[in-house]
Length: 539
Image 1 (cartoon, rainbow, N blue to C red):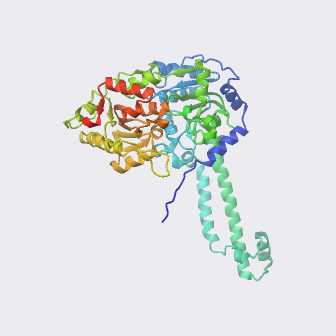
Image 2 (cartoon, helix red, strand yellow):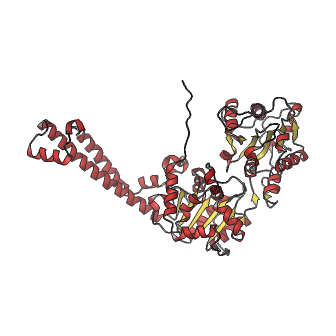
């Protein structure tokens, strides 16, 4: 059997919705583009006072909420890793709802949207648009689908369906007018022949009568289905009308359920991962907007070189041109302070702070079995060394490889080392669900899944965006005499990888190859100063 290749293409519906939005821009959408192109100057947000709903908001989050409530045009919330971006957006949405405003809250992905839904569910009248299969089971009650089916008037639809089921059973007692029996006769002609008791084109009288009865009942079924759908749509529109906050992915904001609905404000999470055509779908419907994201991490995914300009998000354009309309959430609650230090200095100009609740967290908090392995393993796994680097540059087994017909890379030696590291972590009692493995390359991710135990999550950097684990192991893959780094030179990818771990980060790579880039060289120097740089020959 020959090898078969299957390529997964992006959903065409999403692209059609983007094009439809661009073809039908409202004055709100045009205003957004004028801001993006620097043709219009936004009014600077003025903070307003409010009574907190979430008492756990910190001071900077409170300030962001006050500015969002006071903005006339837009506010950009720069929310780096673990700074409570979703919590802040939930408070903003609830505060607007309290004021009687109609809120549209969106995100680029279903996962991020469900995170927002979870924070809002039960605290306001909300409805979540989208197919039920893409909504978390825990949140299905927030979906339009569930709310329609549990609306008091839905019993009428159920009655219709019961009648339709009985009619289908009755219809099936008669002859279905298939082409070989109809012989070119229209439904209207068959009904007329049956009334007159006539036959035609060799079709018997009994068959004509039976087909006529089938057609009559089918017509009745169609009418009942049409009426049933009309009632469902009316119920859906009533739920939309009663809801204070409508939630959808950017793409689902194009659904006809909210066509023509006037929104006072659009709130968009993951704004830095959305292309401008995508984010325009919700923004085309709202008088003002709040965008949240981190332009220092992964940009929108754009596969076509011809569309490369779309990788610059609206958020990044606006924060570059109008920094006065932005605020930085600067207190992170995710990781130990030492893990934050390098990305903070390198990517955030040292503006981030670590909350006291996580400053000193470490691997020892999770260790169930104290164990001595000897060599350097005890140092590598030491809680007081939250970041380590295992250098393969002196090993003869190092090196990247590429499969025939593939542009992706893999590194078998690094995969073996990742397995060894994880085995040791499991031996001291770290749970599989607390472990994560990140690599920049899809082929390396596939290779790792083959050699690692089930239950340990392995993904590319892109797959881990917005995620976190107690312990992260990174396989950098690149290792060659030419010291080429490929797309590892996209430093937003490095920033994303370095900021997924909460208590322990173990990096595996070829120091000589990576150090060819100044930022990686500074990372290696930082790890060395922290006492976490180890040659694989010593392990």
